[in-house]
Amino acid sequence: MKFATITALVGLASAVEIGTPDDSLVQESANMEQLCENMGEIDDESLVEVDADEEAERKKVSGTSKQHYGRTTKQINAENNHILSTQAKCLNFVRKYRGHPKVCNWCKKAKAPSVIWKWNSQSKTWYRWYDNKWHYWGPSKRGFTAVGWTWYKGFWHHNGYVFRYRGGYWYRFQGNNWVRYGATVPIKPKIPRGKKICRPFYMLKKFGFPSSLSAKRLPRCRVGSGKSSVYYMWKDRKACSFLGGRLVYQKHAVCKTGRPHQWQRVTRCVRGAVLTHKGLNYKTGQRHVVKTTRKTLRYTLKRSQGLCKGSRGTKLGSWRHKNASFCKKQCANNSKCNLMIVGEGSRHMYTGTCEIYHAPAKTTGKGDGNRGWSCYKKSVV
Image 1 (cartoon, helix red, strand yellow):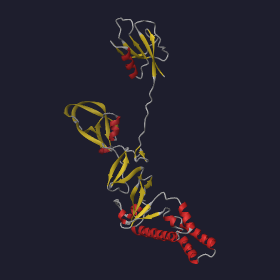
Image 2 (cartoon, one colour):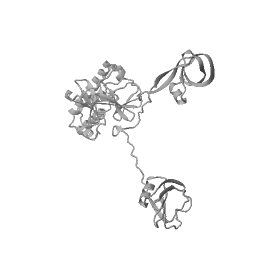
Image 3 (spheres, helix red, strand yellow):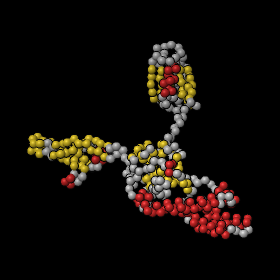
Image 4 (cartoon, helix red, strand yellow):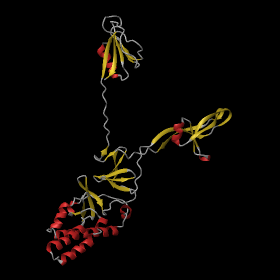
């Protein structure tokens, strides 16, 4: 609370309403104004003190107090003593003059704090209210102030990744999922990565010693340089880049006598890809789900008597001994279909034939009048 405003109101009310101000009240008001004027620099929210039996499960942290909170234990204790003693004096002042109209009216009009704290005298730690329950905050109200850590929308953040503490364990949001990190979190957690990626290769172990040979140039993947370089059989540029090597050419000796090159099959692995920190929905605390709405297209099939005139385009399928209903379903299941021909009407040797096409836009879908055929043009409504 801004007790300086209250004390000023009390002093003013005493002078106006009573006429002869109470010297003790005026003096106490001035003392309280001086005492509470710097309280906002340490804590600009109301403080709520509770009993020890409301203690929740305390988080485990690793490292020194200076590393985590930016202050030594002695400095934190001094700050807490100042906050709690100032709180007690200021609240006692308001309680003492709670019947004064100015104090009462000010308290009624004051807004409730957006952040609520409580102090556990037994464990000497602060707790903060969010997500409809109390959460451990730490021995300092300044929170976890190590470099890189910030508090935002009910979660701890480090290097873009979101952390939360539940059921005695820390969880980190990575790769669009909450993954259990452990009972403690280091001050500088490493960036999460996926599983290692491994591939087989053939590595040159020993060069051959041919006595008579014919030679030709062959590609190799060379990793490193100088005497420490290692040669692998060439697969392609992607495989060589996977090893961190580059393309070179060697003279390949085809031995007639002597000893050929010796190759060994080996497996090489690289680090997995960095898992993304994006995708958290802060309102639900879960990954953000994008709702996709499938647009349903409505279409009509306009029938014309006879075989379709003009270009029919690309044939997508044909069937024998089928009816128009079957042909319509086939055309409906194929997004490219916009024209179909059905052998129906006067019976002939091709009655029951069904053909679907992807016709050019200029095709009208009009039939030539043949009584044994029907032309259907598909049009989107």
